[in-house]
Image (tube, rainbow, N blue to C red; front, side, top):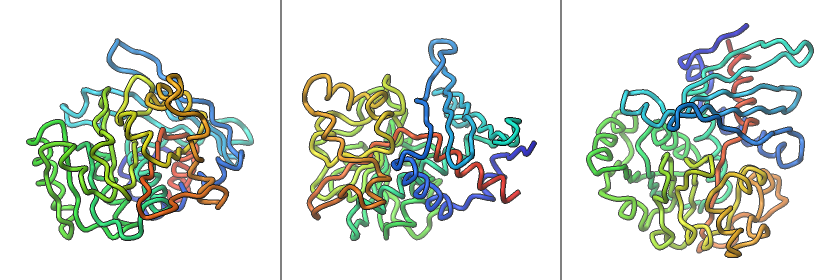
Length: 312
């Protein structure tokens, strides 16, 4: 059995390649060519959980097992640690185990880049990122490949955390104007692209801060017990998701808006794969606010993990 470490994943899966792999997978998902049971999460001790994400696509099948430990960043570790297991479709035997930390970081940012390429204004130059973990770094890398990013504003739990992140990130991105902000509000106002990449249980982005023409990637909240964006953000945007069943079952702000009658299912305009295939219109004007509500799906992990194993 192939065992791919985090170093193997990062070496074998360039971000530009991951973007194209994820784009192709999302089209197939929206064509009904994947079997994607909803993510489940098992409580471990009242704080930490084990996430389970199985899926089938293009003859590939596997399951991502990922420990969700929110206290890990304080220990210098990712909050998402685990393994993606791929199986042989002919025998059912496990054929590969791929580090899920690096895999998740790359494929999640790649998915945001796919959505940004499809939905953001062509002249988007100012990127705001709310969150200072590994996803913040990978999103800077990925979005810089699909838009000419010039300025990146960073907001974290505290101004100090944002400043520390910027000091570290300047080495990796010397050509970008990296700015540490005192608040998510300061980072978001006037930004062309906003990415929320946190594990916050309560909203970190308010609709009042989002200007006309902005594109939002809401990425961090993958279970209904957490929520990164408020309802006003949801209601003022053209809303797209990666996978409708996930959005309807696990996106807290969507669930609440549907239950209250603030929106209907028709307000989910489409999956990003439908936009990519030309079946659903994305941005219609420069003033549109577009929102990509990402839950993360196993199809993205499958295509990226499979590619890694082919390179080893």
